[in-house]
Length: 135
Image 1 (tube, rainbow, N blue to C red):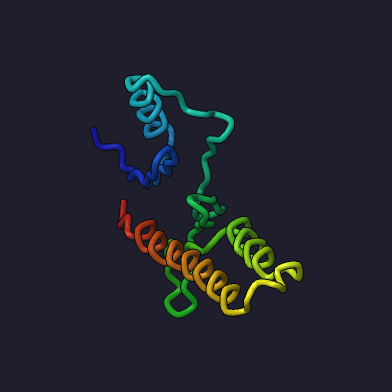
Image 2: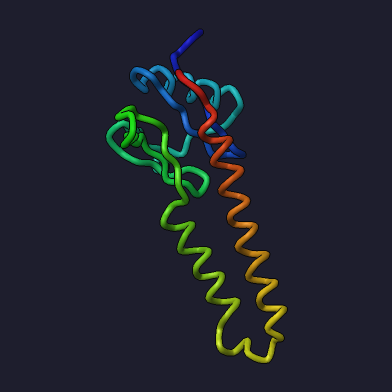
């Protein structure tokens, strides 16, 4: 049965992108989860109209942006505030004053490795999240 929706999932996280209404796709999701012996965490579940609001998924904040050049809407994703704060906290921990006895080259290598990993995650995931195509 076609529901006019796309599913984006990673492990136990899922987003259902609906063209028109979320009732039928949510009903189908509950049915499938029930058949698998799983339940939907209703307290963590929310319905968001992405044309009007934002939602977080896999460390990203996602919403429908409007192009300044063409005026058309497009799915926009960027690292969430929580993700940005986490990398800032990690770099701060790696460069704390009490780490002064550690050779500078070692600290620079740890910071570079950490930041490269963070950037790599968000670059790769952004491509896969935004490639869901039209509904």
